[in-house]
Amino acid sequence: MPSMRSTESIFLRLERAGYPMDVAGIYVLEAAPEGPLPFADIRAVFAQRLSGSPIANRVIAHAPLRIGEDRWSQADSVDLDAHMHYRVVPAPGDQSALMNTVLDVTSQPLDRGRPLWEAWYLTGLADGRSALVLRLHHAVMDGMGMIALQQLLFDVAPSPVCHDLEPTPMVGRPHPSLLRRAVVEIPSRLAANTVATKRLLASAAEQVGVLARSPRPAPIRLPELPGYVPSLTNAPPLTLFNQHVTDPHKSIAIVSLPFAQVQAVRVVVPGTTINEVLLALVTGSMRDYLAAHDDLPDRPIRTTCPVNVRAAGDDGLPGNHLTTMWVDLPVHLDDPVKRLAAVRASSAAAKAALPRSRAEWDSLADVGDLLLPGVVSAAMAFAGTKASSLLPPTQNLTVSTLAGPRQPLYLATRRIANVFLRGIVSPPVHLFVAAITYDQHVDISVTTVSQLCPDPQALVDGLATELDRLLAAVP
Image (cartoon, rainbow, N blue to C red):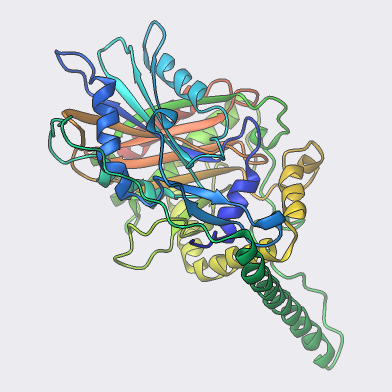
């Protein structure tokens, strides 16, 4: 059975009621004169193709007596009817009704007793469209893994469903006995924890040695803390999105922007990337929103950005292979071009620091290995308490950008018009912006909590407004 990476275990421990740790892909299908695709067609596509994905029948195999390392195992079979569901979006069937339905069907964590994925087929939209919502737990797949799964389920041309084809069986692997796991894995786990302990103690001893060898007392200089540790000297400002939340109910809004326009903005600050333009759009939108709510700080806010660390050619590698970079968003600047230039500078510095960020991510995994699972769970639970809001924030939001295919995809015979994400909201981070470049546009979603932001449409409207501002600056 494959090992469970420490970060994957952390994603599982972060989850709680009302705060699922899965990413939900929202695939909006074009209308057709004959109406929406039959649900039987959607089910047949999954039955015939999903076995090619390593996540199709992957389940959690808990360590014996919960001592040792949880692993991934494979279910001997998968009941598609337990994973695939159908629902009609209530009237009036507009975009708001669709997104409210998406929030409803994805509001609670996935069933841990089954493979950690789920699909919902939604019809009843007023314009004849329909939508496939595909939920994938972050513990089993990251953003790049989702892109790889799209290539498995979807086609680059219409492909009628053949119901005569037999479903591809999903075959599991033999499960090692509990006794064997206890004998083999627990000593291995203890050895791994010993290595982690030695690594942490060696680092501390090195710092003590440096101080001891100093010929004279040196001024006290606090070390730069990892980004995930609250800092008293380098924390971003508090905003309304950093408040304590008592109601996990989410809110979401979406917008699709022309890719050509986003691309055109790059010339405003030479060398700017598409991702940096998108971060600048988020900056301008956040500035407008915070100012409208009398909450605009006089310095940058901070976002984390997931970064893929797969080697070239390993784009389809399953699991989680990522780190994060920390980017400052200059919401305090009133000029959109200066905001873009500042975002570019901060992004460039973050990219230069990626080796350190990856080391910090690995050290977080070491701590996860070192501590007892109960201690890790307690720390994750504390992050959602009111007491945790008294600590300085580590970030104000998360922005995830993914490069999807530049040509349209098809689910059976229906063209996929847009691809959005219902992002992850996990205390103390209550705002997730996800942008996917797909076909000839950039599909962006803003996922947050209603208690803090009942009007996320204002945030997505702000993205389009900031794009217009930057387009006005194009020579």
